[in-house]
Structures are given as structure tokens and as C-alpha cells.
Length: 102
Image (tube, rainbow, N blue to C red; front, side, top):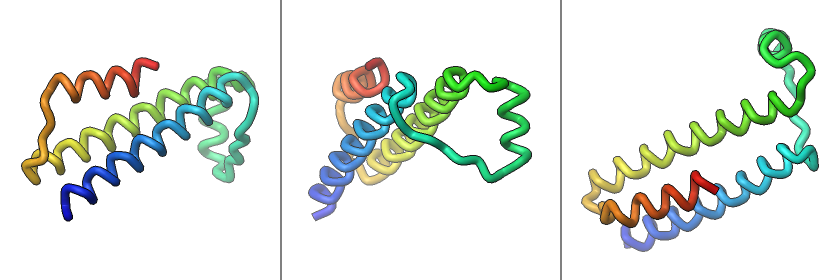
């Protein structure tokens, strides 16, 4: 049962990653996604760093989300190794390239 759960979690994580990539690509192209910031300190910091340049903010947000995805994926990988569910390095590299180099 654990194997099936692990596979469905992997598939779900892939689906979520694909959705995030689509949203972020649209964001970069100025097509969608408005984010409201209700934190004056954060808003001030963003304006100091990026001014009103929404493309630079979008790029920084994209980078942040990618870094968070990588952290999450590393955490999942560690859990899989602990559960002796490791996969060959060649498969790991292929999946990582497909996911992060697109």
C-alpha cells in the first residue's frame, strides 16, 4: 500500500508542479495572477528592490517558487530514501532536468 501511496503522491506533486509552471509562465507574460500584499513592510521592501517593475517582481517570484519546489522535492527524496524507496540516479537527473530546465 505504501508503494501506491508514494506513486500517487509523486503523480500529484507532478500535476501541481505543472500547474505552477503554467501559472508562472502566464504571470511572466502578463496574462494572469494578481497578488495582493497586505503587509506594509513586505510591500515597502518590494518597492525598494523592484520599484513598480512588475516583470522584475514576477521574475523574483518565479525564482522563489522554483527554489521552494526544489526544497520540497529534496525533502520528498530524503523521505523516500529513508523508506528505502530510492530510484536510480539517471532517473532522478532525467526528471529534474525535465522539471527545472523547461
